Amino acid sequence: MALQEFVFPEQGVAPEVIDRDLGAFAMDDVRAHWSRCFRAPADVQDVARRAYNRFLSDNGLFTARVEGMQRIETELTNMCLALFSPPAGAWATVTSGGSESIYSALHAMREWARARRPGLGEPEVLATNTTHPAFSRGCHYFGLKLVRVPVGADLRADPSALARAVTPNTVGIVGSAPCWPYGLYDPIDALGRLAEQHDLWLHVDACVGGYLAPFLERLGEHVPPWDFRVPAVRSISADLHKLGYCLKPISTILWRAEDLRVHHLVQPSDWVSGAYKMSGFAGSRTMGPIYAAWAVMRYLGADGYCRLARRVLDACAALSRGIASIDGLYVLKNDSLPLTFGATTLDLARVQGGLSARGWIMVSCAQPPLINLPVDAATDERVIETFLSDLRSVCDEVRTGVATEAAVLKY
Ligand SMILES: *Cc1c(COP(=O)(O)O)cnc(C)c1O
Image (cartoon, rainbow, N blue to C red; front, side, top):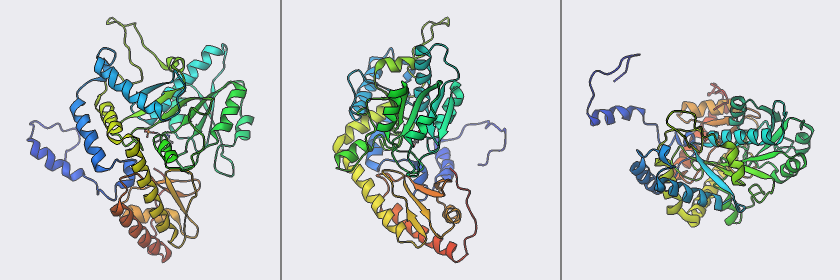
């Protein structure tokens, strides 16, 4: 069934017809893998789906009135907070994704700064050129000026360059733990000292790494200091729907203290129906992802998350070995995900073009040209072998001039 433009179906059809028609949209499960950013192993997904379906129709708009909704959210956010060395009085809020978590932090940062600095001009937020674009969007929405300072030679935030960019209007700094393009941690402790010196709000964007780092640490891997153990950190964004293995859309924004979160609350009482008490940006929302996230955390526990973290390490090792063995490619040395590789003698845009031609949906970085692999615990043998085999033949084609189609390096 090909819908023409602006044609609404006159009659409904049977569910079987719908199922059949939807089959046309299914992606190649293996070659769509990297575009899932990120996916849970099948058993975890099953647990999540059952909880999701059961509570799909429950509307979180009523959280303030339904005891069970409040309880599930509190139990979930308490589990989340427990992972990040929370000080007493820390608070977390569930959001619809990393972008919303970031908007929440920026909004609170602005309100906090306005409250303590009357007469503040256009507020400025310091970040780097590796800071996620959700900060550019958020700053645009909230009338903040995002000042991006290039990272240093080690590709991490450069604290002295950031210090030079502080102005009387600077209200906050953003550090990544780690940044998406290179999988590197910014020196959060040094950014913390800078924040303390100038009375700035330090936000740590741990969207990709937040729910992996605690378990890597338990496995004895080195993780640079990044969470509430760094005293200047006021807020953290961490995505449950990435390496927390929960079903999209769900993320968390974690606040060092409840009075910081309060800056983000906008709860009007100026309409005829009375008070409107939402904790985030959303109005009506499905409770499905929240119950599912609770179910996933209970199902996995720390030992389950450690098992999945180990799988990620093993998959990264296998992929790195395979990529490094291909003439003309190199693997970027980083602290965490995504696994990232570039080219020494090959044209990386053509490598990406060749992979796209084979059906892979790739994520990449333009400066410098790199390809990112969002490895997760569902990155199994089949994905690894198919990818490496396709990559080897694509590189052969690029080397011999057969593959000439270049992909534009972008999302
Ligand atoms: C994914 C990601 C985000 C944005 O999260 P969404 O869930 O896609 O909105 C922000 N920062 C980093 C470092 C990320 O990896």
